[in-house]
Length: 199
Length: 124
Image (cartoon, one colour):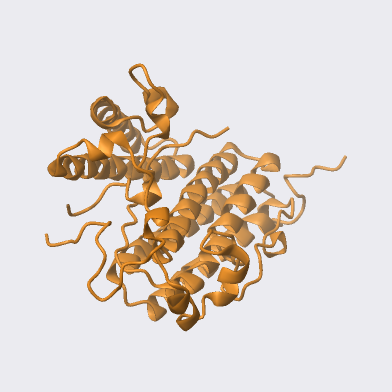
């Protein structure tokens, strides 16, 4: 279960609306490497994991991703407050606006809604941990790209925080992978799947 | 620091006719408070957020280093500090979780919510 805490993991206080930028950053909410996907990936993978280290790490990182989902949504919300229809049109935000107004809906920057096809639970510890490490790197790249596109210091401060978390999570998943491999057959990591021991 | 408040309209923008709809719902705790009350609240909440972040980071480290005694000591210290500061915050400014509701009304639903400016601020 989860308990809501009425605060953000890191403050989001954006002064200047910028719907064009919102339309890019929204990819980290509902895009292929976004925070919803991250939370869903880790929180669903954990059930069949073979070690306490893996289960604990996936639980805690998955929960942290929920707080990042909230931070990205807060950025979108604050970047799209108090807009006129003209501003929305000028920024190219009209294609989002026509379906969602200024509500927050999980889509990629391309407009494709959040899709679970962008995540996986393979049910194999080595495969899933590699998926998780790759996911952290892909999210890091997306944040790098957002920093290339944004010149709002209020936004960039938050994006840099989120980017750093990807790197820390990558590190932790790497440690879980090493820990898992120590449990496996040292001559052949793929000799059996510790999540599915067929008799 | 010369940071404008969240609810100010930047000079280069016209006030919008739908602006009131988009603002945080009115709430007693904010409107009745003197201006610097907001600053103190934001600062205290920022400190709580900082310590909570350290706690999350430390917990992740402990997940993969469960035998690290110094990290565990640090974790316990953080918990003590967070509990103390959260108690102080909730008595003054309202609940951070359901368990923090005090008094004879359900203050949980009072804004501002975190995305409405109700999160801490680094520089107030």
